[in-house]
Image (cartoon, rainbow, N blue to C red):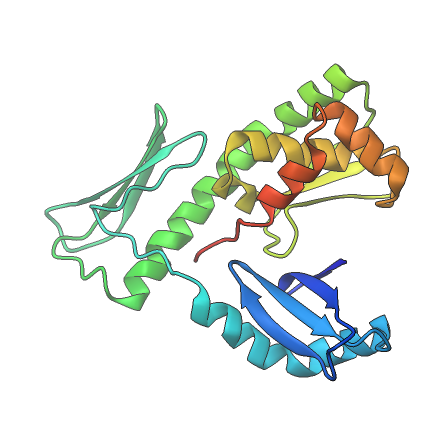
Length: 232
């Protein structure tokens, strides 16, 4: 069983008859919680809340942070990053054109400086938001037409804990952090949420529908998606 926490992301719950207490370990890019069979879900959720500060540190400790320099190779499905330095010591400049996001940094920039990294990442997030708003609604429209789904709108947000969601009014919400993902996984997230316009829960009929529109690859793509996290 997998539960999703707004701060910690996906947490895999593993029932173990030999377990005498709750144990949480980091596995790749997610947390795994092992618990005795007698423990209730409400108790597990309460324990997670109590342990949250320590669990956040556990995630951060194992997470590789991206340090952006002119030598960094970073790309999304719609653009590649190009970092350069200007001759001036003034401001940062950004331009997105022909699939290249050019960020010009002040001369002699110290890329190890935390403030510099925050500035670069803020500019990248602006590009994420712009591209997501430009591209994602058309993707939703196209996939909905192909598979016969009906939706009422598309909203772009900045959620780190959920790639996407679908409201009871059939409105699709997508995080601009989906820009971190390969394009086929973005399409998979959109199809996942479009399936919720028909099946709001994750029951058997939902998975049958998602499997149908993904050519029988719903479980494989779901597993692959879990390996991705934002690395800010």
